[in-house]
Length: 221
Image (cartoon, rainbow, N blue to C red; front, side):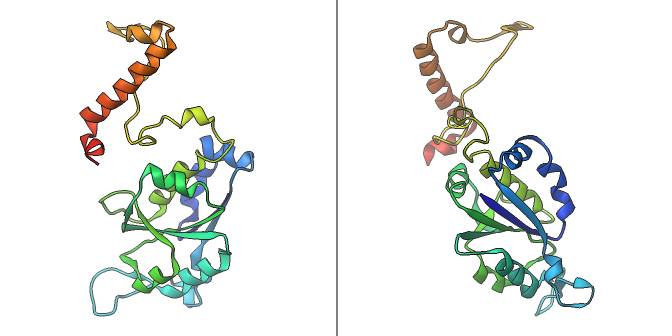
């Protein structure tokens, strides 16, 4: 997969590209990531990318030209362009699974007061990671990147994510490791039994109970 990130703050991505699973995915050639400063596509003095809103109001609005020209410079016939936006569709695990099958993703990170509305004509999908507002789209883009890259073939073992929370519509079951008894808090006996059929049954039941307790809304859906 190819991933192009359009941002005004490329240095924000330095850490995520050089640590943990994303670093390993790059080293395994599972993903190719380019961080592109779309300020370089501005033809105005000092590479200005924003301006005051028509009709008045506070804040500055991202201009069409530099963003659209940046999108057009990197996209091809296999590209899907994603706009990070609090007005977008709420992002789910199903979206991560779907997008992990794409050949090329272009992720646009906004900033300031928002985008010129006409930019929406040049994107394929708008994504929100929650009903709150951040200072820019960089952190949402990192979250989306991480959720997709971990699903790419060869990045992590399939068993590591196929029973993750939300994959089957439920939260994950509880997990434990050594010691078996920590300050009187004991690991359930079934997990020590070696009976894999009973362990599987227990995990299915616990995933359902965990969802009922913490995210009943998922069951209602």
